Length: 426
Image 1: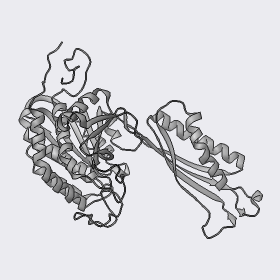
Image 2: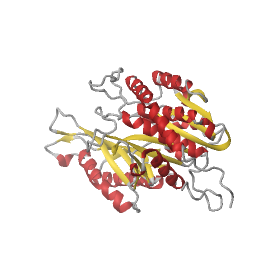
Image 3: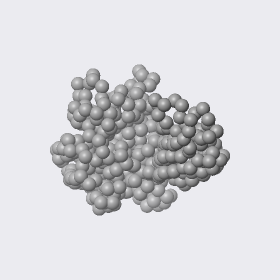
Image 4: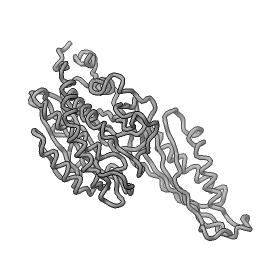
């Protein structure tokens, strides 16, 4: 058996926790500054300037500007020891077109725009991780890439970072980590999906074309609303009877439009409906799209209607790497406490284009709790009432710093027996 290259430093976790505590007020200030200037999509000039300014203050960080075709940033830090792996830590940084209600002293200054998904917090804790790792740079080797991605909410940024900026190369990334502030997880705790942190994402838009006519004589019409409702009612059975397997999957119709609200005696010519479809497995998602169109075709044939179907596949799943799970769990417990980290056994079917990273390198996505202990439930993501809990910033920054440290030191990833790292830090 080969000798282990690296051993865990017994004092390192305490040092990281101390440094994280020391950074807390700085991270709160940064988070609230970002919260005041939310920007959507990929055009994020004010957000970009704040993050660039903070990265440039950190000793040992090489800042790559104008990544992701404009307003993304990559910070590269190399440890001072001779050898090590390369770890990518990613934060998404864009906001949402949501009007923030009054009440906070750091309320959004941009009308109709709000950090209603907590990406201001994601950026702040990643800056915190960089500050901590800079302070302990004498103790690790390898490279950490701090990636600040615009456009996540609109499905952009990740591909550009990978294909144009070559963020996974030079040096080649060995593993990647990301996280989200999660309203259903208690503040101070972290949930880790055992399998899928996010699902494969698709969408559908269906237009049923019938025959318009007077509502008093429906037999002389082809009612597109009736056809649409029949398709809607059949969708659950498409999942259960047409597609085998027990993996998570769902259709959700999110709109249906037909007729004129001012006219009550006309059966309309068309009815349009659409929504989202999700699955843990990409093959299942593609099968769902095909079976949905078959159902639409069959119903329209019987009804005597025609249809147009636009069924799209948007992105893949975020599957947490099995060989990183134990190391990630123990690292997070070392920072937050043994009872503060747990595995989530069910699959999440939200969408996240961190899948572009996790499909290329081993990766883990964490759910960092933001629900205060005294509250059973808080407003969810994308709500105007969404609130980020600043108290979690120091812990999240510490966990990310520890993942960077242990990842670079080569003791996060389980390997085949005989490599010397099959037993993760006992």
